[in-house]
Length: 160
Image 1 (tube, rainbow, N blue to C red):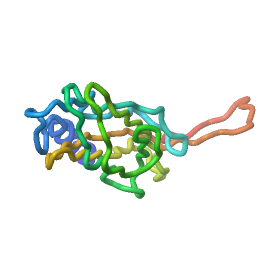
Image 2: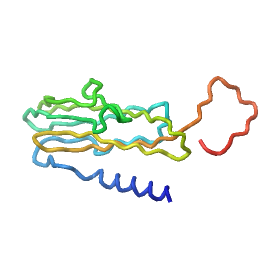
Image 3: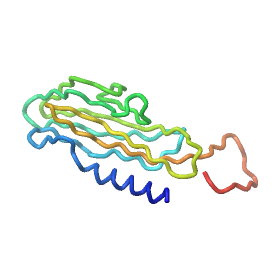
């Protein structure tokens, strides 16, 4: 029952990831992705870093009013905006033909669970009174780490 509900929640999240809140069709702003996805992140270890870009394909400079990690400092995700580790940045000049690099990674805290963990957040971008949301999705798995041990023969129980 839980697994079916969990799959339904994730499916609805992924289907909504193509939906835009606000539209930039009239501007020259382009996003390199609409969802940043992390597959199987082990708890306590962290993930690889993923990149996304906000691109100004137009001939005029644009001010990006605000870029914000929706979960703020309590999010499992971390955000780096144009070289600055932060959860929010405002008033960014995006010159014509240039782009802003955003880097994100995720650190999932252990929950002592044998089931996969889904962590969801988003990055909100405001330009010219329009808002766009980039979804962040990570699958995590609790693990038992074994340090400095030689395993000759051992029986492991089912689970993580």
